[in-house]
Image (cartoon, rainbow, N blue to C red; front, top):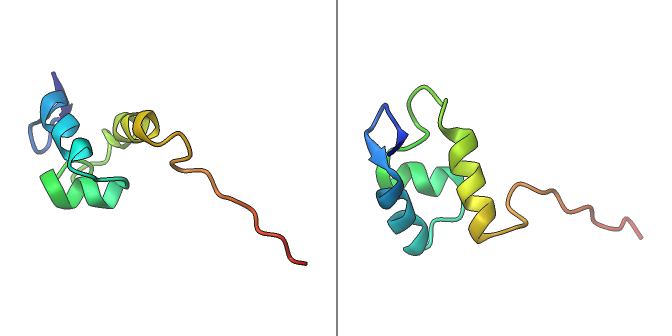
Length: 65
C-alpha cells in the first residue's frame, strides 16, 4: 500500500526510511520524497513517526525559572 501517492512511496519504503533513522517529516521527505508533494500523506507519516518516537510532534515547555 502507498503512503505517498505523489512519489509512490510504499509502507515498506517508509519503514526502511524510519529504520535508517529518519525522525522528522523533513528527514522522511529528504530520504524518499514522501510528504513533499501535495501533503495529504503527512498525517500518515506523523502517525508512523509517533510509533517510533512517542514524543514526536509534542512541544516540551521549559521552565522560565
